[in-house]
Amino acid sequence: MSERTRRGIAVTLVQYALGIAALAWLVTQIDIGNVLDLLGRLDATTVLAVLAISVAGLLARFYTWYVVSRPFGDVRYREAASADLIVKFVNQLLPSRLSGRVAAPFVIRSQTGISYADATATAGVHTGIYAVYYGLVALIGVGFVSGRLPWGLLALVGLSTGLYVAAGGFVLLAGMNLAFLDRVIEGLAALIGRVPRVGAGLADRLRNVMEFTTASTVSFRALTTDPRVWLHYGAGWLGALVLAPGLRVLLLLGGFGSGFEPAVLLPVVLVAAYSVTLLPLTPGGVGVTEATATAVFVALGVPSDVIVPVILIDRVLGTYLPAVAGWYPTLKVDVSSLAPDREA
Image (cartoon, rainbow, N blue to C red):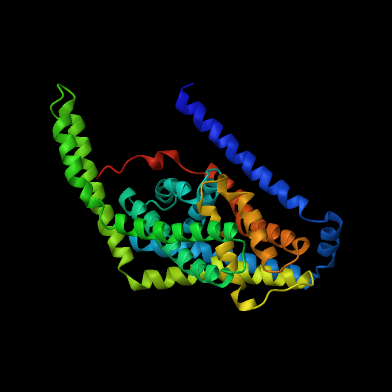
């Protein structure tokens, strides 16, 4: 085993340990008996409403993938839904939400059959627009809580929110200018072409990458310059990331005899509190996200015995159950479909 491999395993173990420690901290902040009593008070109407909102939020998230993939072929909504679930499953296995998106082009290709160039553009645009919207909405939440949170917690939430804005802008700009790599690739191809016997073949294969970057850039620009993509994606994103979680948390708070003022700002505060999922602290942000969100709402006056189960339920319904559901379509991925496009 190489030194790099051992170091990678050690880092992963530390990240899992951090997630477990964060969840353990949450448990110490509540009275289990009181939490069980609160859960027992939830009426059937509230439970059904929470479940209905969760399903609606999931369908809205599927729609965001459908919006960015359908311009490249006869993509069905079901295929976009499968791609979303698989990407969600992979995201929970890796330390960062963005690192998990690396697998997205392969997933999209396998589920929809569109070319790698178009699948790469689809994944990149989805990531970029997602991050931009997330960062801008989270900034509203940060503005509301500034001055009301401990400086360390505010700095963490502010940093992660700023990274969302920066990451989204970088992904979109880089995606629209992939062709700048052509000169570098041509130089490498010319150098490799001098290698006896195998150089010419390797150089030709390397030059094929330029066709891929050009095609992907064209597709990327077509998506990002289409106002309808931003509008329809924004509608799905708003439903999945703002309205569904916000309404779910409001209903649960009300069911537990608590609340949040002003209620209209709770969804954007929740977006800001969950922004730490971007930081590569634990796989999928497990533990750290729940702990950070709890700390934010406790600082804003919500009792810990109330907000801890609310956050855990929200995360289970909005993140963990869909990720677990993504395990099944992952098993059905046709590996042969991941072969490079012949035309590329």
